[in-house]
Amino acid sequence: MLKLPESINWQQYDLRNAMGARRMAWQKRFLFKHFDFYGALGDGFTFGCGMVRLGLLNSTFAYLNGPKGLHRVQFDLPLDTGFQSDYRPIGRTTWNHPFKSDHHVLASRTLESRDLHFRLGKHFHGYLSIDCSNSQTLALNTPIANTGFAYAQKSSGGQVSGCIHLNGVEYVLRPERDGCYHDWTAGFLRRETFWNWACASGRVGDDQPLLSLNLARGVNETSAHENVLWVDGKLHDLPLTLFDYDRDDVQRPWRVYSQCGLVNLKFIPIGSIDDHRNLFVLASRFNQCFGKFEGTVTIKETGVTYSLAGLTGWCEDHYAKW
Image 1 (cartoon, rainbow, N blue to C red):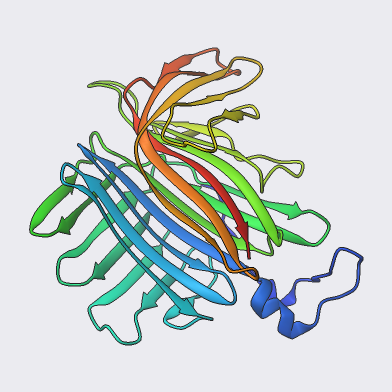
Image 2: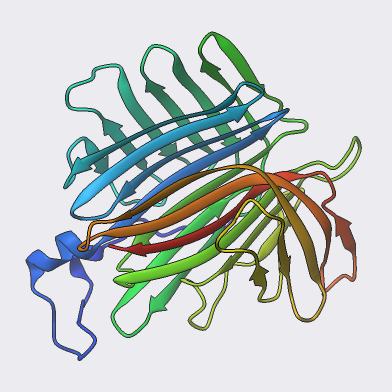
């Protein structure tokens, strides 16, 4: 089993500006970024919940897209109000609204599981657990430009269980069939950052392997990348990929592919969440689409080709100034 770092000691990092001058200690407090995102792909519904630390503010959100449409909740609070993390890959992240006692999120990470418990009011609450005991974790630490670093830890290859309640309806996650995703990232990222991301997870049919796909362009491409396919929990490396989509209409189909042909996917959105705002000091152009994949992925080392036809997941277009 991969041995994960004990902590992210960002306070001791030799942080510099682009010209090589050392940053002041107080500046690290505002420049350090962190996010903790959980996703689940059930029968007819998509769930996501994230806690994001931006330095000047923190943002917590959750959504469920199902037969009755999209329900989304988001709170932006100044500095670290309500937000707390031990910055340990095996540890916990919490958020508690300072004025709403029934609004809180607890995310915990152990060697065996990634667990989320949340309540955002009387009518939106639940939990999910990703079994990591028999699946490999993707973990990488890469330099960012000539100023910072990013540590990314992703878990998607294990079975997911849990239950989400929304307005009296219960959405149950089935470990034998449903997909999941967890991303825990921390570091001194670029002041202006852009990335594309794609994920698909689940089984294409009975007696088929559990597949989970993670593809990205941007952030972690300084001598490394995070493109992998989990097959029943085992990680397989994939090549660099390209994302072809309409930036003016992200609801149109996407093409996600590698020039060598090992990755050849089409993504058809069925909905999305977005956050477009320009606050000059901070800015965001965020589109997280959820939908269905078509196409294939081939593992170079084994030559085995896997069909992702019908698997659900996400594709993301994200620019941030933070």
